[in-house]
Image 1 (cartoon, rainbow, N blue to C red):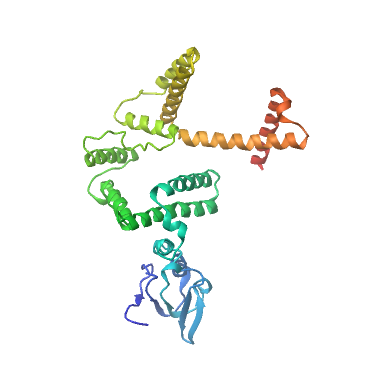
Image 2 (cartoon, helix red, strand yellow; image 1 turned 120 degrees about the vertical axis):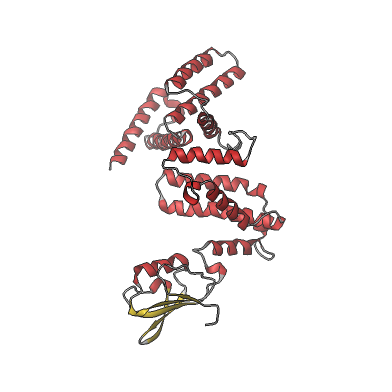
Length: 341
């Protein structure tokens, strides 16, 4: 078995699948569900194992280990890096292989710039899975997001600019630094205290910078507006209650109604959206998420309207608004009934 073998005799101890491992149990003890679950978190189901029993060694796989079978030990050979599909190391090895000479020509040609749209797309697909409550889809989409991180790391490794270790090291040290109430001696017993400490630490890290600097320019405009105003509120630059922005909204609506050219209308319309984002922030509503859900609701209802019109041989362009509105109300009723089931 070699000198590189890991001897695991403590329940819950970490296992490195890159090295062979021997899990030792008191004589005649069952492995137990906890130990098996820990193995299945690290190894693929078809990874071979040898069960050492009083009757001799038995060959099995991680997926077929029986928690009620008495064993003295379980031996697991080392897994190839690209077989460690349940570990970050395994994913890193796969992506590295794709980007290596003789790997995938497409992967080897990518840059941070060409990968940009994929990162945006995969992020929104993950958000969609969350909105739909589809946990299986969320697993897949988060995997796609994680892949983008490793792809950017491989591009940077080729350039000689940074590595995946720089990425994990950066976020790890930042989390420790900005959570002194967990990793240090600072007291913080509420989320508000944590947020205030976070902002103070950020400001000390970048002296002379603006509190608004952390809002990405590429953020969707509605989300950026809410984030900008939320940050300004932390230093007292905001109305003290919801009445202020509600009154401002009425003012902006009036200015929009009086605008008499395209440029002024666009500006005033932007002001309306800006105030709406402020109202959402006051009420603890994620404005971008609220609009995304409204879009999703419209998509569902309009799809039913199209189906009803097609089913009845109606041409939507020729129906007129009253008839279309009747179909819209019918679509709303159908969706409401479906949601009640």
